[in-house]
Structure formats: C-alpha cells, structure tokens
Image (cartoon, rainbow, N blue to C red; front, side):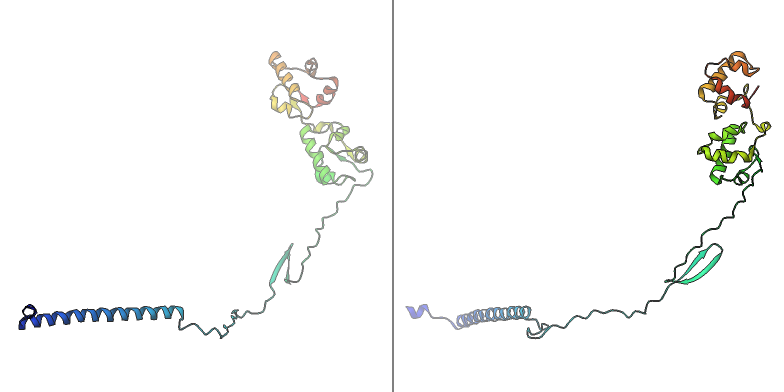
Amino acid sequence: MWKDFFYFSHRERQGILLLIALIIGILAGKWLFSRNKTEAVEKETAVVENPVSEKPPSEKPEKYVPFFPKQSPPTKRKTFVREETRTYYNTRDTVAHRSPAVYPKTEKLVQGTVIELNTADTTDLKKIPGIGPAFARRIVQYRNLLGGYHRIEQLQEVYGMYEELYEKITPFLTIDGQQLTQISVNSTSLDQLRAHPYINFYHAKAIIELRKKKGRLENIGELQLLEEFTPADWLRIAPYLAF
C-alpha cells in the first residue's frame, strides 16, 4: 500500500525534481544576496570610520602660515597749505603756521581837533582816542535811532559808555543842531512814533488819541497837557517833534 502511495509517474517525478531545484535556487540566491549586502555595509562603515585621506595620528599637522601680500613702503603725503595769497609746499611732517593778520593802525586825532558828531562816520569816530570799532558802531546806531544828537550828553545813553571814556572823548566832538531828523506829529503812525528811543507805546497812543480828537496839533503846548508825559520827557523829546 505504501509503495502505491509513493509511486510517481515519469512526468510527476520530473515536475517534483524541477520544483526542488527551483526551491534550492531561490534559497541559494537569497543567501548570496544577503551576504553581499552585509559585506557592502561593512565596507561603507569602515570607510567612514577610517577615511583614506585621514593621516595617521602619529603625524603632526602642518603649521598654518598666514599669507600677506607684499606692500610697498609708506610714502610721505604731500599737502598744500594756502595762507592768504601765498602757497607753501610742505611734507606731512611740516607744520604750517599762519602769520597773524595785521590791521592798519588808525591815526588818532591830536588835542584841539574836533569832528561833528552827527555827520561823522565810524572811520572818523575811530580816530578819537579811546574809541574803537565797537563803540564807533554803537554811537552811529544810536544816532540813527534818535534822528541825530542834539546834546553831547546824549552819548552817555550809548550802550557800554562809562564816565571816564565820555570825559575823554567829549573834547574832540562838536554838534550841529541843524542835522536832526524830526518826527511829524500830525502824520506819523503809532509804530513809527514808538520806534523813537524817547517815546514808548503809551506816549505814542496818547499822541494819536489827541490828534484824533483835535484833528491837527499846532504846537508842543497842546501835547504838554497829556498826563502820560513828564517835564523831563518833554525836554528830551521836544527837539525831535515837528508840527
């Protein structure tokens, strides 16, 4: 019975042998492929751990030497220094010193010489002993505000004027009372009136109000009735008013 059970025909035996050979081939191929893959992984790991370019630890690394391009030796810079109308050619180590400016010396007036205060300019005033450019400008500026000086004593009102200087310069000065610029009381505006050093806002407003009330002012006596002015005010202002 067992003999009959394991009996195979010629065709069946060929199929069984072919199947066995196929199974063996598959197993052999799988074993060979896994082996090659394992060896490749081991080789890659060995390359990473020990790269060919890495030098043996016993060798010393090369010392880094920085590279500097060749430079030409520093040269002295040439500078041109301009001083007034002259030019100097100097090296960098030379210091050019500017010569101090020289102003022409103003000739002063001698004793006994006098100048007219209302027509003198700053050049004339600087000739008076004790008066320099600053004081000459202040005297002229204040003269323009007043409309001219009518008394020598008005120089004491110039900013910065002190008693010793005033006494020193007065012998060289004279005044022409005809050189005054007067203010027209009947036509000058409020702003023009108050621009005068001797007339403030309240003075100017009182004059304008009186002018509106009377129409036209004829003389200074009409203004002297105003309470805004004192007798001292009229002594100073009267020479500069015109009716």
